[in-house]
Amino acid sequence: MATIGDMAPDFALPNQDGKIVRLSDFRGKKVVIFAFPQANTAGCTMQACAFRDEFPKIETENAVVLGLSTDREKALKSWHEKRKLPYDLLSDPDHVVLDQLNAFGISLFGLINIPRATRSYWVIDEKGVIIDGQVGVGPKESAEKALATLKRFQTVRT
Image (cartoon, rainbow, N blue to C red; front, side, top):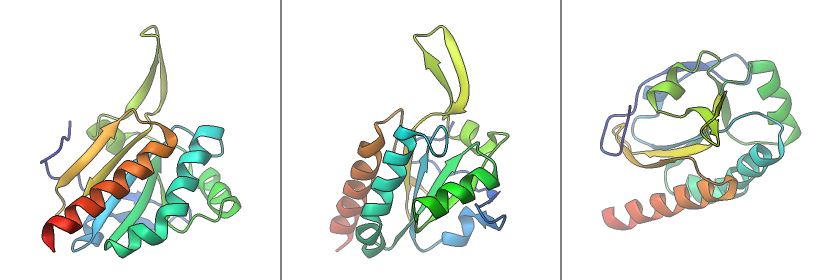
């Protein structure tokens, strides 16, 4: 399980277009990853659009955004186009990365476990270290908290 201060698990996952995206490709930039349960649902659309709307501010902090779920590429592509998302959505159908981030499985009342990504976010620094994150977060909160972390760490370095 990855926690703040750990190296983020490197991965190679297909995006909505089937292109392989590797976390290591972004060394030298901060990376915001957000996990969402299912594309094109109300809460997930709210979360994805919050990151879309904050994207220009995130870019000014030398950061990129990546969405992550167990959805297949085709579902991600349709949603990506429909919502005009300016960042990649990554498909982790076997939840390998989600498991490493401890963000797979939604528990309802401790009785039922739904096999979906848990709504979460992580901020990874330029060297690949997790500097912030939360598993189980509200749709709008994930973008707000990630942006606040980016600004806080930018302020510290300037």
